[in-house]
Each structure stands twice: as C-alpha cells, then as structure tokens.
Image 1 (tube, helix red, strand yellow):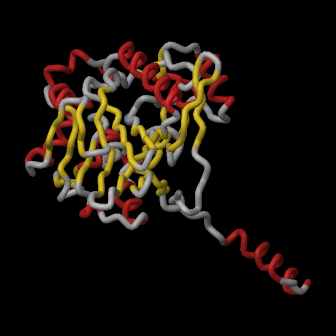
Image 2 (tube, rainbow, N blue to C red):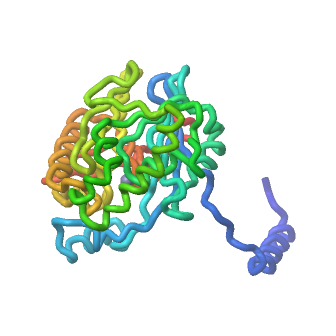
Length: 315
Ligand SMILES: [Zn+2]
C-alpha cells in the first residue's frame, strides 16, 4: 500500500503534537505464555517481579565477581526478578504449580489470579495445586483474606516442609532474617488445612501418571522438583534451584541466605543442573526471567541458560 505524502506528514505532525499527552501505561502485557508438551499444554503465568538485592543475599562469591556476572547479563546487583507459576492442562485436569506471593510482597506479587484470567483460566477451575516448597513467594498466593484462592483444588506439598514451617519451634534452625517465614506459612496454609484441602506426600512419589515429585532438599527441607513426562518430552518444574541465573548457572556453588541449608542446596543444584544438561530436558523455573522456560547447556566448568525460542502458536 502506498501512503500519500500528505497523509504521512499529517500523521507525523499529530504524533508529535500529542506525544506529551500520551501517558505510559501499566501494568505489563498479560503475563502468560503457552508451550505444548505432547497433547498437554503448559502455561507459564506471571505473579509479578520483585527486586532482589543479590549483593547482600548471595554467598560464596566476591562482590567484584558478582558485579561482573550481573553486568555480563546487563543487570545491576539488585535485580528485578520474576516470580513464575505454571499451569499444566492434561485434558482432564488443570494443575497449578506454585501460587506466587499473594499479599506477602505488596504490589510486587499477587498478580497470578488476574494473569490466569487473562490466559482464559478461572482460578475456580484449578483442580490441583502442587507446591514446590513452602515459602512466601510460592505458597503465599494459596489464600486471600483467609479463604483458599483455588477453592476446588487439593493442595499438595511434601510433608517435610509442613513439619518444618508449621512448627515455630524450628525457628532456631534458620537465620534470623528468615524467621518471619514461620508466621507467613501459618497464615498461608491454615485456611487450606481448615478447608480440608491440604494433602501432603513423601517424595519421591507419583502425583498422577506423568507427574512425579522428586526430592530437592536444601533450599527448604521438603523442596521438590516436579518431573512432567508426556508425549516424549520431559519438563522439570524447578522451584528454587536457581535464584540468580546469571551467577548460579555458571557457579552452582553460590548459595543464598534464603536457603535453610546452603550446603545441601548447593549439592541439589549441582545434581539437578548436571541431570537436565545431560538429558536435554525442558526446565520451567520460578525465578528465571519470565516465562522461565528453557534448557541448560554445559558451559566450561558450569552451565548456561538457553531460553526457549518464542512460538506464536505455542508449540
Ligand atoms: Zn522462591
């Protein structure tokens, strides 16, 4: 199509004249992204982003190396970090993996219900909630004003995390900065327990055919990775194996103060990274830049993250 010069001139004139009156808009485009796993569908759904001060939280790295690794990814040391959740549609069930932060992080989190609806998924229709672990940014969104957000859903989590976080007598086992997690866990899970919807498991175990919970201890005692195998593909839903992708992929021995047991978390990270790199599995990660889906490649002494290639058709 040929556009007459006069029209172009008018368009550019009006765009220029109006630019000061065009406010920028918030929030971001609806935060969901779809991927096929055989004839199952996985939808990454954003709960928001939170700025994480990696300079004060990461351990086992010097400030200079940290700054350099983040700069190599064009990021500051206090970096905006994704909170991702994932819905698996098996054709007969809608399964949500992690629930975001709910009200626990203020405006930074709690966007999961809106983004689910934007993706055409009603929170009322979720059949099953799988928690990778109990922590504010993963289990906080399971309730709102003391009522379950996913009223039909059974909520499943490893018994070890329930035993640990719902017993305040354990608070001496975590760093002082992590002690509020006990009260947050109580607030998050008590409405689900009261509704008779919490059902724990002992990993390793099969959740349904095609979905297994695999122990991934260290970050919390009952952290698990969910392995979803369908249509000849495998997707590993990671929870908190990685918090700072530009740093911990290359240096898996870097831990974070959020870890209940940093040494065990490092051993788990090394094992999980080696396995997905060897198998070529898909990974869905809670804190890698949205949608947090990709693969892991060996890279010298460490690994590198390869985000999936955008697909308009979601295949
Ligand atoms: Zn987390």
